[in-house]
Image (cartoon, rainbow, N blue to C red):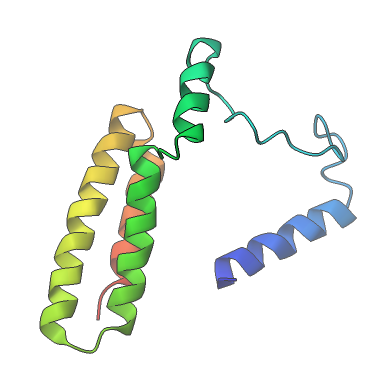
Length: 122
């Protein structure tokens, strides 16, 4: 578990103990993760077919690749190979940013991209 995950978990536990989440709709009930949240009704059947076929949305695959490249860069000792990984990471971050921009989520994901770029510096 990453440091970020640990901090998030601690804050969630603290909020639960303080009763800050008691008024949340469906509090204490299990989440229904069979359907992705926020998907319009006319697209749910298409999403279900893709999910059953094991097809991931491009942005999910890109996020997975970004995390892998980030780990490779952190563990790589060969400078030439590290530079190649950084170029691949830069390309994937750009593609990810373009996809998210088309969806109107630019501010959040640009900040994510900048954070990842900072972490990948030598």
